[in-house]
Each structure stands twice: as C-alpha cells, then as structure tokens.
Amino acid sequence: MDVDQVAVELYGLAPEDFTAARNLAAKAAKDDGDTRTAEAIKGLRKPTLAAWLANQLVRADPDGIHQLTELGEQLRQAHLSADGPALRRLTPQRHELVGALVATARDKARAEGRTVTAAVAERLTETLDAALVDPGAAQLLRTGQLTSALCHVGFGVVDESGEPARLVPVKPRVVRSKRPAPARKAATSPRPRRDPLQQRRAELAARAEQAAADYAEAEAKRVEAESLLDANQHHVTDLETTIERLTDQLEQTCDRLKAVRRETARLQRSLDRATRPRRLHNGGVTAPPSSWPASTADQYLKWSSSRHPLRAMTLASLDEARCLVRMWSSPARHLCPAVDELDVAMHCPRTA
Image (cartoon, rainbow, N blue to C red; front, side):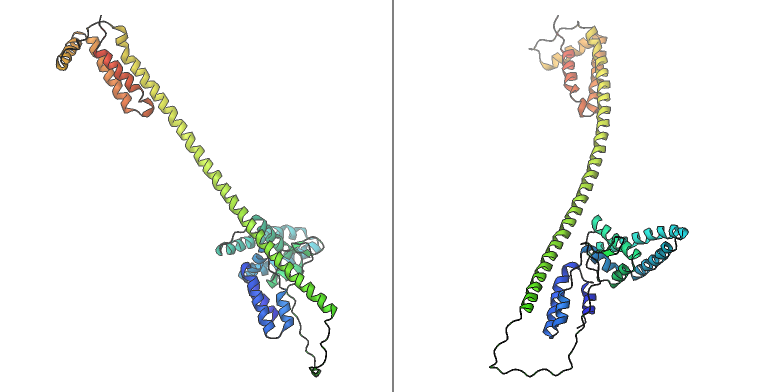
C-alpha cells in the first residue's frame, strides 16, 4: 500500500470523514503485515477547515494555483531586482488573483453545505499569500495535503500553531533485509524481556494518539463554534433589517395619523358651523307632550320647522355634518354621538 496515494485520497475527503477513513486504511495496511506503512498512515493529521479549503482549491482549480505560483515567481524576481514598475503592475494582479481563489473556495464550500467564516477566509488568504512569497509554501500548497493553514513571517513559513511548516506525509521507505531470517528458537527457550526503550516508545505513541484525538475533538468544537458565530451574525443582520422595515412603517403610520387628525379638526369646524344657528336662535317651539302619539308629534315638529326657516336650515346642516363624520375614518367617529345628541335637541327644544 502506497502512503502517498492514501494521503491524496484522505485529504480530498470531507473533514468529518477523514479520521474514520484514515483508521480504516491503517488497519488494512496492518492486516497486510506492513506495520510501518500502517503507522505512517495513522500519523496523518486531520486538516483544519482552512487547510481543507486550500486542499480542495488545489483539486478544483489547478490552473488558478498554477497562475498563483507563476505570479509568485514574478513577484520574487521583481523584488530581487528592485523593479518598481513591475511591482506596481504585479501587485494589483496579486490581490485580484488571491481574491478570486478565495471566492472559488467559498463557492465550493457553499455547494457542500458549509459556511466559511471571515476568520477561516482570512487564514486561507494568508496561505495563498505565503505561497506567493515563499517557494516552499507553494510546494506545500501544490501537494493538496495541508494539515494547517500557512503564514509567511519574514524568515520562513509556519503553520497555524506557529511551528515551521513541513510536507505531510513523508513516504516511508521499507528496507527489506537480504540476510536469511534467523532460525526460530526452541519452544523451551525463555521468553525475552521487553526492551525498556520499546516500552517507552509504545507509551509515547499511545500519548501521541490520545493527543491527536483530543486535538481532533477540540478542532471539531472550534469549527462548530465558528459556525454558530456566523449563524448569530446572520441573525443579527436579519433583525437589523426588520427594525429598519418596522421603522419605515411606523413613520408612514404617523404621517397617516397626522392626516386623520387634520381631517378630524376640519370636520369639527364644519360641525361647529352647523350648530351655530342653534346658538343664535334658542327660542321657538315648545316640545310636544309625551302623551301624544309618535305620528302626531312628528307632524307637529314638521309644522314647527316650516314656521321657523332658520331652524330648518340648522337641521339640514346637522344632517350634512353627520354624513361627513360617518363617512370618515374611525378617529372621527366619536363625533357622531355628539351630532345625534344635537339633532335630538333640535327636534325637541327646551320649553320656554
């Protein structure tokens, strides 16, 4: 089993599928009797989200990565020769190419249902910038087997932990001895004691495996926290949009309320003009006795109105005001009872 081929397949998988596939490949190598290959496969580290994006970008857009490495070589030559015009020409191309590659990685992640936070995108940008500046970083990127994002610090390339970046994995070389195998000892020979050095190595290997598992768990929690943070930021944006929309609706409602109040005031003035004749003419006809039949009382009021033209005009004005008030919106409806009360008073004036 070829470790490099296994690594190419593993670093092309989704992050959540990496550990299970790696352990399965290591077990297969161990079952084949290739212990060193199994240990080498077991030592492959799960990539961070930024490293996974970079690895997928290498697979999805190899032409873009090739342009990146070529542009990096041109930039390094321009720096070495202090070619100012070339630097001014190449620098905008650098920003444009890096931005386009990051956008491609975001689109690929979005197509797989993943959210790329601003922090992860920044780490990916640093990785691409490191590949532009440092040939070693470009070589690491082209393998498509990064386990951590890269960052150029002026004297070399380091990963996210600050350690010098290295190519992962290193292909193990199995050296087969040409000497014949020694004869098996007799069954009665005593069992050799375990070498303390081997025991120490086994303990360190167990600790390293536990540390790798702890790191993978912490990385998963970090990715989950970043996803939650991004979701909360989207929620805050939605709430701000809702607040702006409700604020606009409130302003429109206030404008309509002002218009209704102005119309209500106009109707009130119309009502005041309609009731002015009653204030000027308060005498006239006595109310019919309560013992009269309704028909007789109505005839009496009509006769009384015909004798007093001013009162008839007042009643007509009241009817017009009532129609205006009832045709308007609800804020002016409280005026209707006042008009009705005034109408009753006009039909049944107080006795002299």
